[in-house]
Image (cartoon, rainbow, N blue to C red):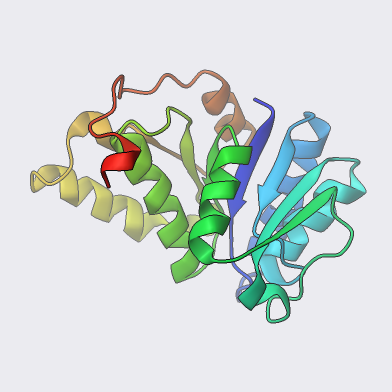
Length: 193
């Protein structure tokens, strides 16, 4: 696994455990020689994960849309920073750069980005692992809801297995290394949507 895309908040959150987890995860990626792909910001959780990876000697690739370049205060000291034309282009470029996708605590954007990657995996657009680093139980309610979706018949049990959930960053990376997607073929071709 060469690079992992991390989705997380542009804010630090209220629990100090959130920033500590972002810093720890950035260091862990760098220590393992895994590059970080993220949204390119220098603030909140985004800035913390990038700064810690850089300080530990890791490679960090940021992708930020022009409209957020100033608002999210783009990080100027990355291995590479791509400024793109739209959020859609940002998400696609981040996906192209990464071999796996992890959500740390964050807001609506974090959730939307992770769920899009899960949807792409479900449709067979990629076979890379997707995970939640469930810091301080932040995602407990969401994980329960995903299980409700299975019970209600809206998500197949095999598709629920597309998401790895743990509060242990080292375990998450180990499970990513051993990951074998339960989806083996594309449902539709990307050009059809």
